[in-house]
Length: 206
Image (cartoon, rainbow, N blue to C red; front, side, top):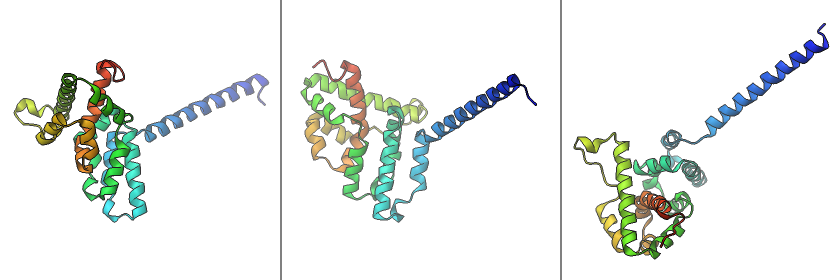
């Protein structure tokens, strides 16, 4: 028979083991629940959108949007730049494209566009320059510095689209653009929002 003190020690050990087991299980659950760029890529590759019913397609697209929105800004931007985020895009209907773009743009981007329109022309130009430069640098890092050894990386957006962004009011341009154009513009808008936040708090300093 165990003494009262021995029973207390045994129970304490059992409780301690239980606590560690729960902590370990919680860690595994949290790790498995965390969305990463690799998990998003695996999800996109595992689903054949063309074989899904209308309801299943809607569910799959919403799940992809939810996964993208749970990524860090850096990981989401990386998936935008390598087109993983839009691997299903060509298979979507126009309505699905529009809904997907609206669902995956960063919070507050419409307010950012309005604030951008109110900035002096020189500040708008500088903000666009900084955003595009940052995206090119990110693209170079993704490709292992390919530009350093003489390989030209594709620009974040086409030259034509860049020219239109610079000459047409961004708010008007975005509202009149097709879903396809918005998809191409998405990484620029997200980076522009980051640049503006860094440059003066929450779009201050006009």
